[in-house]
Length: 108
Image 1 (tube, one colour):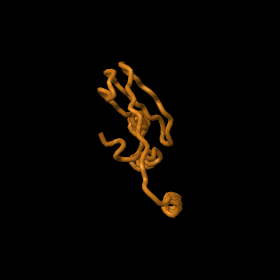
Image 2: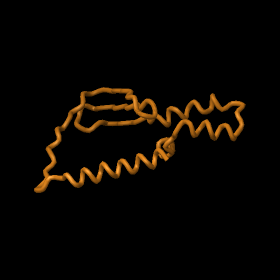
Image 3: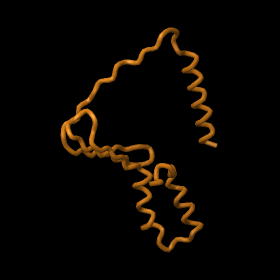
Image 4: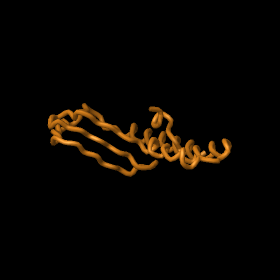
């Protein structure tokens, strides 16, 4: 029920935004080009479902050599092996549901 109510609220917000779009031509601002310094960087960010890890490997150009995201669901899934030992299948389903996984997030 809560998620359905959230969707209705989102629709209400979208309708308000559409009703208040200004008339005339729309032009997006020019985006700045960021040149990353050469090196490897890792940053953790707290999100609603846990910790998001961001890894960047830069060669010093405007395009990074490699970017990798470690999603919170993927990190949370790694503890399942430890907490599921000796647990009944029915209890395991409830435990997994409590993690609130987003399946495409952990399907690697």
